[in-house]
Image (cartoon, rainbow, N blue to C red; front, side, top):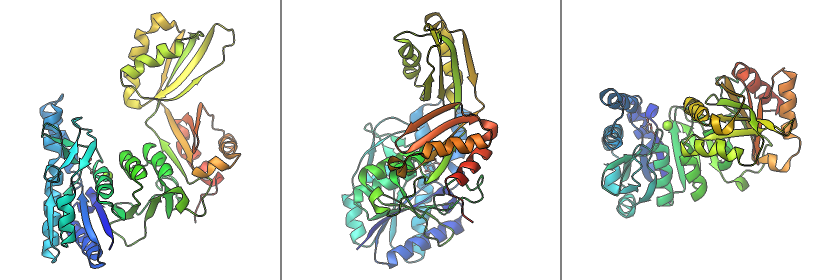
Length: 406
Ligand code: ASP
Ligand code: MG
């Protein structure tokens, strides 16, 4: 008998009619003979509304009370879905994080899951009762409610699937799968029938907001087969699986982009040992995440230029820190530039193919797009370009790698 975890996102539960439709999907899975546990998000808009209320009342709010408030949306949707299931003759009950218990650390607002007690859930699943678990929430060691960070109910679903040893975790959402590129930018983007965990991880962390990044990390670690599918249409969706389950691996699976980048250049920094540590140590201490880094060779043997990128939200903090460091770094100029985007081509097939980067550089150059910074990993090549080239660059690359559909 199959054991399935089904997750429904906020848009899939946005109205009572949609909750009824979700209940029908659960019922259909139960009718196949599966044991079914469901994880729900809050109804669309609810969490945003609760977050705004906290900020309005207390701009620098107590993170523990914030979690008490923003976790409430999932309590409502779990109870409503359990009711909708009962109405159509499916035995079901709701579970809050603390009732299970789903234990987390005490990093309120972005807590990590430590363990899930599944004994009682498993007993009830075996008795044909559907468990409807409120996503996004858990309980800290001091018994206070925690939340897992925005989009965290994906992670609840994968964690539950791992803990239950589920055969599959179905993520029902408002898109019908994972695409080769953002269909809003590239009309010829194609839906992928399969993608590897590693590729999905890159896509998710680069801003293809289909799944919370952490949920993909967890699925990869515990080898939970994931399926991303629409809750509105009966389509097969995209399977996120291990590499060896994909028979014909494309060299490049997708093109992703991120607008959340800001470039900072230091001109004329002394070229001596310890300079990189002097720049990046204080940034790390201040929790500023640095992404791409390039350092030029020194023309005169005395000074060099260093360019790097940070998240847009961290740009001002990084600039302030570097101003404070001027006496040690003695750079000639500090130049921040927020008008950049990072574009990446992603594919596990790159490991075994040469010339993948060259195709990217050629496509960009044919379109007169200047590359400002390049970085690579085993399965990804990223470039930084001026923001105004985003659409042109993404479309050109989609075509260059043969990803265009009809
Ligand atoms: N309701 C939470 C949010 O909006 C968690 C989730 O939907 O995954 O971020
Ligand atoms: Mg989501």
